[in-house]
Image 1 (cartoon, helix red, strand yellow):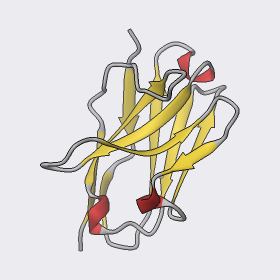
Image 2 (cartoon, one colour; image 1 turned 180 degrees about the vertical axis):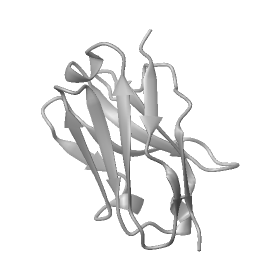
Image 3 (spheres, one colour; image 1 turned 135 degrees about the horizontal axis):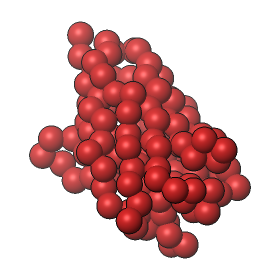
Image 4 (cartoon, helix red, strand yellow; image 1 turned 30 degrees about the vertical axis):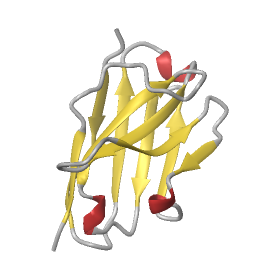
Length: 118
């Protein structure tokens, strides 16, 4: 069972930045695409960004131009650089490895809370 640990969240003012990290047990990230998701209170979990094994990226429209996903296969870690944050970005952020159809298949970790507020 893959264990996922997200970190890097916190409280930030509108317009600020955060960098999230996602670490996985084993060497799973080098074999799969990885996605970052988020879930705001009262809303469904949604895909924020994903990155393939080869480094190709894809972003939800609401973060394009502001967020950047990257990976370090040596460290078995995936990152999400978040810039120009706004209150609508407030959510718990999760990561998960993705199967061949880009569906998350790992157990969800505890996530990391991002709160954007003045």
